[in-house]
Length: 189
Image 1 (cartoon, one colour):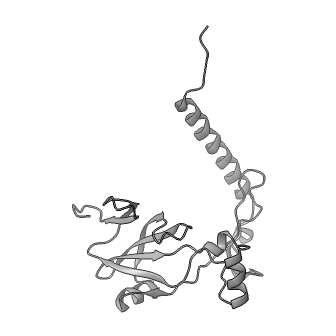
Image 2 (cartoon, one colour; image 1 turned 135 degrees about the vertical axis):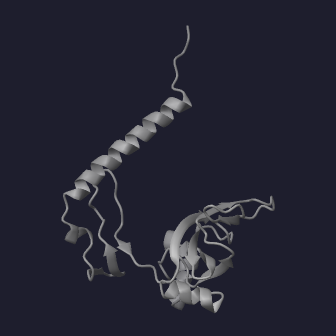
């Protein structure tokens, strides 16, 4: 007697269809909310200004937190810092990995700057994931605690061309995460 089983492909298809249906229902439910409720500048809570209202609006399918601006300073070349701080750089791509080996994922942002490309490394903050850990409690007592998902300042680096595409991986087999950037219509990485 042959035993019938679900193949990995069938499982994947069922998963994709389920997620699509859930996202569609959640999007429909969010469309019924007035736009002023979804994004009303100036509304605040105990952690700062809410820039996108999303909390509790997708029940029971998708639950999001309210969006907040992330304060970020930059270290690196002065012209790169200025381009990012004055919105002279155009954001193009994102990638994530634990580049500093601390635990939480870090975020790489790729930009087109006035004179080429810019890569910004936003280091992940372990306190935002584990706020009750002994180290986090120590930082709370010291006054150095932050619940922001990323530490400030972000480190900026110049690349020769606009960073239309960024990727993360161990490209040189040294057991450390690396970043690769490429520009659209270019042959260089």
